[in-house]
Length: 429
Image 1 (cartoon, rainbow, N blue to C red):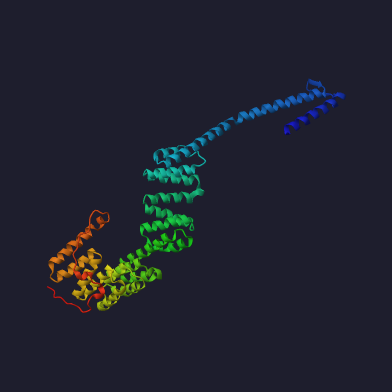
Image 2: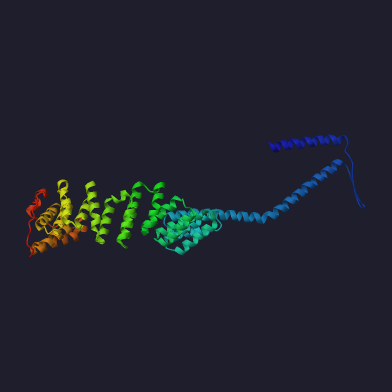
């Protein structure tokens, strides 16, 4: 429409000019030195138009020739960009298909001239990682940051992920610590840091992260709970390496719900046994068992050597009313009776425990008791059966070995409530 309007305007002007010149054609005289030109106004106007058109075409031609090198460069650059885009696509396909060498070549061939150089270098770094070429990987990541300094966090995260996948924990810790300073509230950085601290068992730093991990809900409730338990457990184990005072300090610093957890209380009791401080563990385990029954804790209760073994035995026997057929309780009662030299009761408890669940440690306790009573043959039999169970347990889980048959005394079938309260002392051979 614009061109048509211009044509109409031009024709109208031409007609108006022609009509004007028809009445008075005008007169133009040009002189320069000895040269002179005389013509009508119409002819002069046509000549000027032709001269303008010639100058315009000449100038456009010169400008076109002047721009030829630039246009050639732009065309070459466009072809390079297209080639780089095809290389990026093919490299990512090879990377997804696990063709690491081909992916690296395709991605790096045209990376410097690509508009997406960052993606080229990141993909090439992953391909180099899969080939074990860590120096090339780090070089590509360095080029990636140089190609796009604003993507430093993304590149550093990629570097940390690759280092973690290859178990380069020290380098990954350095990368993540730097990222932590650059982006203190970055969720993914916190997740990677938490996993790294868990892998390297850096419980002190993981403990510092736990509140923030909980506030941000970066892990589901079960995973966060497992991480908390692992941290608390690790802190207790670290306390064992130093002193009883440090162990007690770490235990006192735990929250209430942690102190009531079965596994943590069990671990703490083990550390107290290591320091010969069972007296501190006895009331904690007793209170925990009164709140909620645990075979793991009742077994630990039987291992505690407190100052008042008689009182400890009395407490344990009160649990027979509700848990009389618990093999672990009977094992612990047998151990406590052995500690008080109540040989008859110890034997009945241990044999009753074997009747419910034949455990290697129960066989060992009974074998030691029988050996002290001079029943060497029976003791050797229980030693043998206990060793067979201990060796065969992992294989029995796969169905390769059947448990050995065990003969127990008829007293094992009696309920624990029927155990006589009067001690039957047997002579020691």
